Image 1: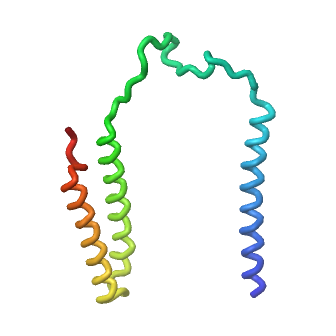
Image 2: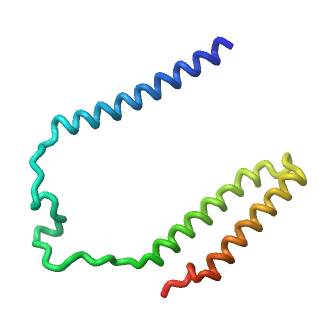
Image 3: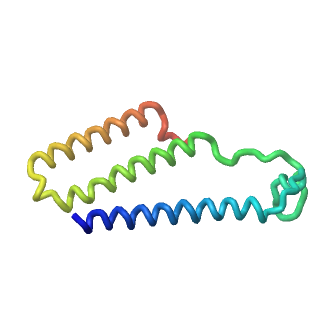
Length: 121
């Protein structure tokens, strides 16, 4: 029981140190940084040339939707690796749970496909 309390003390010290370091750096930046804002400093810098045309977005929103779908399905696929490692220990219950998980993944994929989120044009 004594080591359990010591572990919490170490965790509390680490959290306090992390919070203290973050606050120290933020306050130090606020104190040391120059406070002279201006339109020239706020303007975007591109190769030293003045900005003649307004900035236009390069990618449509559809690109970001496809990217988010990829990340979501990729992360969900990563959840299958620990299941595969413990497959023999989980038994039938673990197998059924993974079938439900894969079915939900498939339904999400079909929904995104039907909505046209996977088309590039």
